[in-house]
Length: 118
Image 1 (cartoon, rainbow, N blue to C red):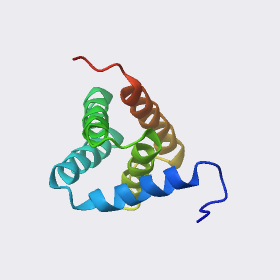
Image 2 (cartoon, rainbow, N blue to C red):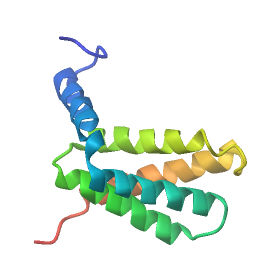
Image 3 (cartoon, rainbow, N blue to C red):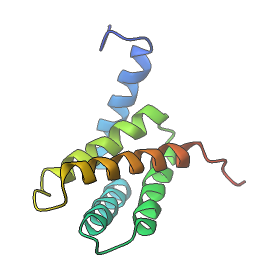
């Protein structure tokens, strides 16, 4: 089966299926909710980016512990961000949200590839 018409299709499809299968993961859902809450607090200037980065790292660590590849983690992260943006019409401009999202994605990638202590 060819999906998306790009190389690595089987791996991407497997990652997407893993994401969908893990949607019933209670610890993962709690991690996502903490990330969403921190995102809103930072966007409203009620918390610092330090707290948000900690939640991003927690989110990534949880998904990495389930052996999800980096593209699956990014897909999941972007879905969490997109879900939250729909409910945030009262928050700062799209430019500010976009910059914040870019920073979150950078943190995600950095955390995913950060060497793990034994």
